[in-house]
Length: 362
Image (cartoon, rainbow, N blue to C red):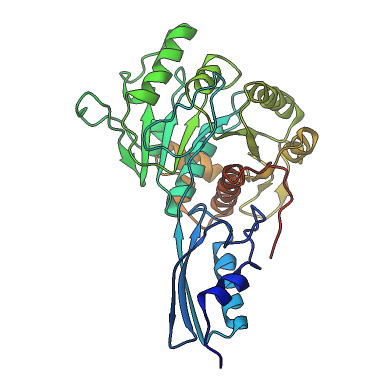
C-alpha cells in the first residue's frame, strides 16, 4: 500500500463539498490538524461553519469515506466549529457590531399571537444544545415574555457599569421584564422604545456569542427600524401560522425588512397540524401550507413547520421550554431542524452566496 501525502489527501478532499455552500472543504479552509502516521493512518479536524450544522454526521462520514477510498488504513475525522461573523453594513452604511457577537438574528412576525417568542426561545436552545454560544434579547418592550419562558426573574449586579445578562439553559437572556416591577406596564412613545433597544445592544455585556437572537415585537414599527439602523443584522426569520390572515401580514414584514436591506433567512410556520394524543387523528386547525406558500411566493427559504402541541405552551408557561423538557418530542425535533437550517443559511451568506444558491450535495 502506497504512502499517502498531504497533497494526495487534499486533492481527494476537494471532491467533498459543503452541502449548504456548495464549495469543497479544502477551498473553504475547513481541514485542520492533518496528520499522517505510518504512511496511511490519517487524522484531521473538520471545522464546520456552525456547530448547529444539521448534517454534521453525514458530513463527517463523507470526509472519512474519501480518505478510506484514497487508501487510508485508518481515518479519524474530528469535528470542530468556527462560526463566522457578519461583514455586512447597517442601513446607514456603518459596520457597528456588538463586541464579541458574531451574528445577530431578528425573529419577527407581522402580527401577534403566532408564537414568535416561543419560537425564539426554542431556536436559541436548539442552537445552544449543539454547542453554539447563544443569547436571547427580548426586544418586545411592551409585552416581554422571555423571562417567564426561560424562568429568569432578576439581573445579576452590574460590573463596571455594564449589565451582565443572566444565563439559563446555557443561554444568555436580556429583557425589559427583568427591569420592570412585576405587573407594571410600559407606557412609552416610539423614541423611548428605540432608546431602550439601543441600551440592550450597547450597555449589556453579551460576551462571546455565535448567535444573538432578538425577539421583536409584532408589526413593523420602531423596534425593527432601530435594530436595522444600529447594527448590521445577519438576517431575519419571519414566523407565521398557516392561515391566510397571518401569512398575508407576515408578507408585509418580509417587505419591510427587504426595504431595510436585511437578508430574509426564511419563514417558520408555527402551530401547524395538531395530532390528538389519544386517538392519533391529525387535524389542521389553522389550515395548512400557508408558510410554505408564502415562502414560494416571496422566493425565500422555508425553514420548517412546528406542530401545534399543548405541551409547547405548557412548558413555556412553566419556564422549561419543550426542547429542554422533552428534546426528542416532535416539536423539539422540528425546532432543531429549523435552527439548523437557519444557521446554514447564515453560513451561506457568510460565504458571499445568495440564499437562493442551489445546494450541492457531494
